[in-house]
Image 1 (cartoon, rainbow, N blue to C red):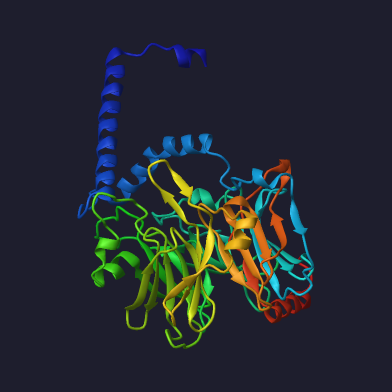
Image 2 (image 1 turned 90 degrees about the vertical axis):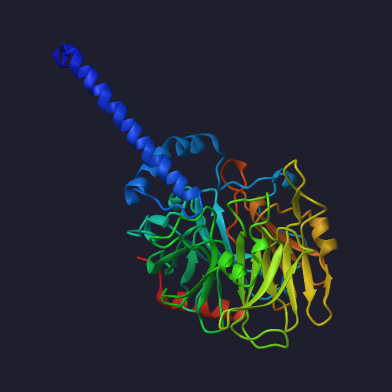
Length: 454
């Protein structure tokens, strides 16, 4: 071994190696430079194809490692110090009259992984628990999708996003940038759709199709997008992609490009699509098959008809950087208003986060829960959603602070949940969902009939 490491080497060999190394470095740099320019310049195709993509990924390793070493745990909540040492559910008043269930999606800090729990709202007890393992859910899935941060598929970074409870007790879900998948009660994958990677919300329409935001990649031969090309995606129950429409293209085709690319303020997240809410029944202002769409960057809600590619209605504000739009009845919608602005000193909440109700019949807005949410100190700089129960109760998730609020029709805070785990840290939620009494009962009956997992 000593002879191997200390043997004499001809000077010309060293010079040749240095020359080859220099040429290889320059060639590698040229490939990476070309790939970067193709990703950032309009109408600039990549020269080296897959080789350029691989070189770009290789050159990004130091940046990725640095981010991992310096960033905080992305599964931990922030701004939770205001909750003191409170942990789990705390009941402040009787909850016997609250109907239905909460499909609680969260990071279990005790095990450091994503879980989903079906919680009975009348007694706040866990009736069933699903463990979501991304290694199982995404086993064999392609990792060639350029818009995806694949580190979010690792168990210590994975979040279940807005899971949907099926009548047989299985869940349909996705991560934050992942294929759409379904899994049974034992965590085994039963469906995967790899056509597009999806993010944020997941909702089912009246025909059993699932709608989720996605990022649509450039096709072969087209220049790569310089921005996050958010779009609408509809999947059949078996995962077959049934419809996709890029939001920037949709707005451009309706002469609304100025809403996407305003002068002097370009950002990669040009629309930040975060919710698609399907219309389930005809009404005086919409029809079954229409969808409400939330665009955070524009502080805008759209009513869109996919069957005719029409934008039927749109409104910017008074909500600001909102998440979540829900249909309340045949003439009203509710919007989770984060109400955050950046006046040059970073993102701040002006006043409080709130729920804004828009009435199509009167063209007016109201804020019926401001007092209750103000007393609870609702402060969601990002994410967040709400649901109304059959019994008229309000459920609010403050994802980034790891909190759930349960508020009565009289605006009384009945209970809240703080997702505190190991080491007294509080962890993030994953967009929980209200489940009606009938749907929850049916799913529990199906789960009981299946018996325990192997």
